[in-house]
Amino acid sequence: FGQYAMSKLANILFTKELDKRYPKLFTAAVHPGLVRTDVVRNMPWYLYYPNIAFSFIMCTLQKTPAQGAWCTAFLAATPSSGLVSGNYWVNRAVQELWPCADHGAEQLWVDSAQYVGLAPALSK
Image 1 (cartoon, one colour):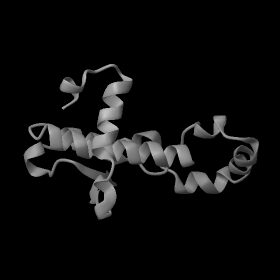
Image 2 (cartoon, one colour; image 1 turned 180 degrees about the vertical axis):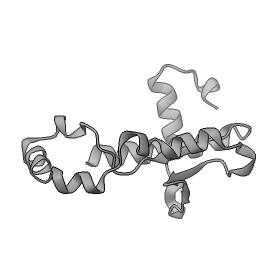
Image 3 (cartoon, one colour; image 1 turned 45 degrees about the horizontal axis):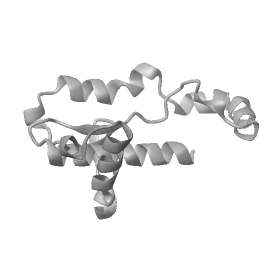
């Protein structure tokens, strides 16, 4: 799950930097919650089989894919004038982040621009 945590952090940092660079856009990072998907299919056996064994318990805790998409749909349908841009959303509510959450956002932006072949002038 380390890769998921790192990708979620990158998503939050990128959203914050996008909001800083383009203040006229509404930006949001969304955590859908524990959604019932086939994500375990690529997990190592020692995570895959226990997940299968306890799936009857896990399915009571998990959201359906439609329920997982609810926060994203809510943000897409709500006029941005009533929302604060650049936040991290969980279950239709802004999730407070630690003050260090902005650390590395600019470097991630620069590195991302470089990886996709954007000139530095276009990434600012």
